[in-house]
Image (cartoon, rainbow, N blue to C red; front, side, top):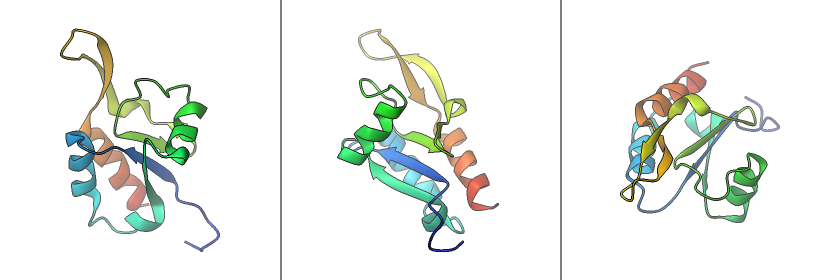
Length: 105
């Protein structure tokens, strides 16, 4: 991959997020991960811009995976939070699988 090419995917994460930690831990040793996956803090200006592009600033699921500038929806499922509100929750294994596929291309 040349230096002029941008990473194929962006992974948005946040502090104190078990799913975020799980995904980062399971992808850290993948081949080409640093060239193909960019990790951005979800509450940074860049992270908020990415979420805004997908109209998901409020209540965005973390980790949030954007692949080829599209939200990777297959890595999420509807769940309920502690208060019974329906939310999107990350399916950690699907996110790791998708990132692994990208790194192995």
